[in-house]
Length: 256
Length: 256
DNA sequence: CTTACTTTCTCAAAAATTGAGATTTCAGGC
DNA sequence: GCCTGAAATCTCAATTTTTGAGAAAGTAAG
Image (cartoon, rainbow over all chains, first blue to last red; front, side, top):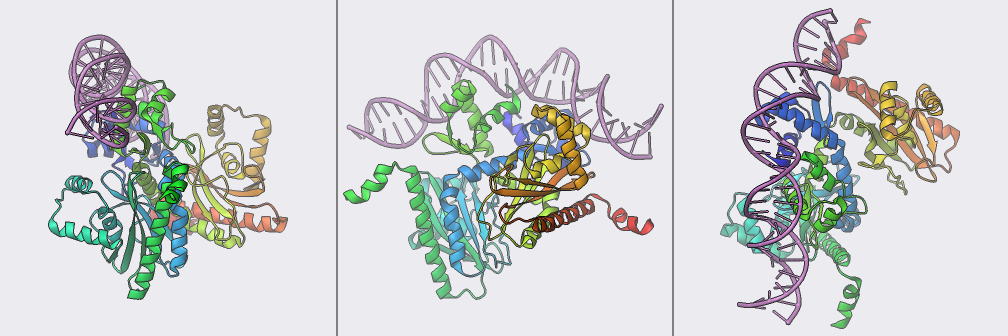
């Protein structure tokens, strides 16, 4: 094992249920000699990627918190979408959680969550949680807007092949412009999602609302989907404004 | 440069105002050859620590968001303190921002922030922001509870020496049990802070409230300080419960 | 002062990194 | 389809770092 891999192998041991590791446990888990693991841990400590915990254990360090903040402050999508996300949750006028998710290289990840004050539930999705590719409106609406080539690569990487049923499913979502799912991720919760695509920024994302299925009638669903679709369009517009020189942005509509 | 350092040097280039870097710019900034930087960037991409941006630029990647979430979910201090922090902000009954900060190896960092719904200001402090060691109630109250040896090491590392004025200042804060600062960090804002110390967990932290200085009279300040000190005690108790075997925790009071 | 444990150190063999430049890829323009 | 320039990867021998087993040193509790 070489370079970064050695370090990442240690960091990837940490999980929701494995917050603290001893050197001994790491060495066992990685089938690596103790002296090597000690050295690796020492370097990670110096970098702030690990910190020492109790009983000779180590925990994820402050550098992650620090870099996450930089991510929040500098991500163009987040900057464009945060205000809109807050508005959406307010305009929904019912208990809900708004989510912003996007496709990274080969995974969909939620990058922002905002609950209405009266929401007494929490969806599985939250900032920093990788999402299943094939389940939930949030992910599907993203896959539906992917260029065929990229979708194929993604599915290959995920071990799935692009069967016709899936293809038809995604084509329908794409035409429709939104996606609704019920109980696909969390029992009793429904997810409504609209895509956010920005060619210039090379990103495909989605804006979604999670609400309790009970009492969500067709009229209400319609209202909320329209809310999402228009909010997503506003985010796209804000992104285009970020990535385009100002002349084009203003002149183009006037010239046609 | 060797091992992790090479990778961290690249990552540390990213800042609040430098969200995207090209390989060329990195090579210039680090005075390193392009081919080496390309290799480094490729590894960081594969690890998810960087992602590709527009115009051949690179940005901090999804791994930081992911690991930050793990930090939130598994940090014992955060788990113990979050509910209390929310209560404190609610019980303050005036526009305020509650902060939880802690000392890492050689820096104080804010690890949680919670604004009351009516707070129309934002303090400089927020999750993931390293704080000045010597300024602000939040940091001072932490330094005041540090063992002499550790304080000396910390100051040496920060390039300061422990002069008598500082020593007396910190001793007073320690005796007092809390710290109040006005405008030390943000003009027009006051900070009230209480220390959180847990020997068993080897951590020194602080719980603080930031409010507008105007209209903060002595009586109100006293009320809020009491609120903070009591809340900090509750967090300490919750931490002790986490780090102590259950028998001791229950039996000890009965036996004395 | 032990004792048990955690962490760092030592050293020669083995493996990875380095950097300059050549090569390949890729996106856009023509 | 075919350029063109920039971006990214590859090549190779010299150099530097990593590796792992075990010794040694530091550390905390009894």
